[in-house]
Image (cartoon, rainbow, N blue to C red; front, top):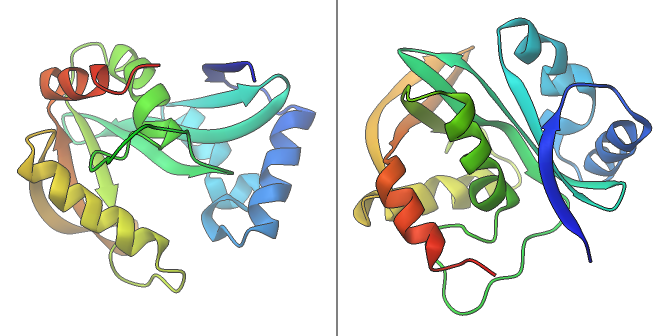
Length: 175
């Protein structure tokens, strides 16, 4: 398999195939470009990043201006996880956390990166697991819990990324 992660701004057939797969998997926030807020993210001065296997998109996350920095991993979803060896409490099986965050840190040009999780209103249980993972990441110092706030009509937890600790931890999971 030939995995590559890069910025994506164009609406390609690969992108439409990806959202179709997300809809089939029941990913409500990624089932259409409108649900993903594709155009909104770009209009705000944001960017999208995608991991591909050849021409097939496996994962997408966005980044957009937020507070005094940027909100990373926005509307992130993956069709299947990245393979990792051993136990992993830092979500390095996530293409977004492993492969997109370095590009999003670069995009933020030294400004703080925030990641939000939603532990409420989750019928699938996926977001609850991700939220709980971030609480564990905070114990390891990769993120700091900031607060719970209403963000675009949804109560979310805000986490601030510790870039240095992130890269230290990520190094353990490099291929």
